[in-house]
Amino acid sequence: MSQQSPESKPSQTWSQRFETALHPAIAQFNASIGFDIALIEYDLTGSQAHAKMLAKTGIISAEEGDQLVKGLEQIRQEYRQGQFQPGIDAEDVHFAVEHRLTEIVGDVGKKLHTARSRNDQVGTDTRLYLRAQIQQIRQQLRDFQGVLLGLAEQHVKTLIPGYTHLQRAQPISLAHHLLAYFEMTQRDWTRLGEIYQRVNVSPLGSGALAGTTFPIDRHYTAELLEFGGLYENSLDGVSDRDFAIEFLCAASLIMVHLSRLSEEVIFWASQEFSFVTLKDSCATGSSIMPQKKNPDVPELVRGKAGRVFGHLQGMLVLMKGLPLAYNKDLQEDKEALFDSVNTVKACLEAMTILFQEGLEFRTARLNEAVTEDFSNATDVADYLAAKGIPFREAYNLVGKVVRSCLSANKLLKDLTLAEWKELHPAFESDIYDAISPVQVVAARNSFGGTGFEQINQAIASAKQRFQQS
Image (tube, rainbow, N blue to C red):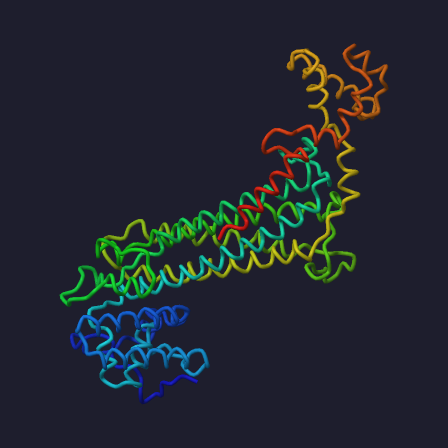
């Protein structure tokens, strides 16, 4: 239950300039306590640092500072135990905490807000929150990468059709395919680390917009809260949301990568592809078609990507017309940020589970699939080019070969040596080895290619980067 009783509702938030309270509907519309309660732990931490600074600079006494810090810690414990659950009367988490603090320590609690505005307070809380969430998401990315690496090591010699334009192009190693997503998520991990540096800047002490007349020590609070720097301009400090937009950009790219992989899993699990089998732990059935097994996890991830993209667009539109400094519009940043964080974390967890234990690659089917098409046609042209025939001439010749094979319902591997020599005298019996899927893959040994030697080097490189903190 809440510590607040009807008799102890917070007093009117605003100064005596206002003669009447807000209309109930407007109070509901104005309130953010329903979602910014997510910031409470960070608000308490930031407030404790502020209280310590007030005592250090002599703005309040050391005894008063100690009372405030202990009272805030009591609120933390009450919240964790479910005993502090402020309602709509509190308006937002900041006033809820201040009101409860005053109940605990008396009038000393009213001194906590000295030399501080809600504008720099909420900015501080949001940065503390996002800083922690970025670290958690980076760890989740590492967990996902670990699963991808493990699968890549298992499937170096497993072949899979490679596609361009969703048409069979060239056979590749399945490990090569999985490592492409390792590289995407590595960029995500690095990008979040870069954004963390810009999130980790303290606006505390900027006041409402112009700083404060009190002799505060912003460097001290930044040090207590482990911020890497301070906002140099108080106007910028209270109105900046670049860091939130950057995070939403990074979150959107994470979702792009997860959505692309989800799309592939959905194809792979279809009867037409049959490249993977979905296990019961990560699939559902149909309400009327008993034979169905649906790829719900990748479908949901694919759908949730649009949700995060929408939050990014919403934040950009939110900020585009705001004059300096703080405006109430900025209250709208919280739900977009919170929901994006929760969505990305949920999707990373689900995809990690899916690839770790929810699907199985059908290696026999995959190795068979690369023998069913003309994806080795380029290798025929390369074969001729290696014998001194201009590549474009070889390219045109192979195009004619493919056309004739299609007419005869044959594949390149089905041509006899006599038929090859009839096409060009440069062909020898080694053409069959050159166009075998395993050799086609192994031969692509350029740096970053799908050749097995390159794959093993790529796995070693990925492991080295994976171990970075």
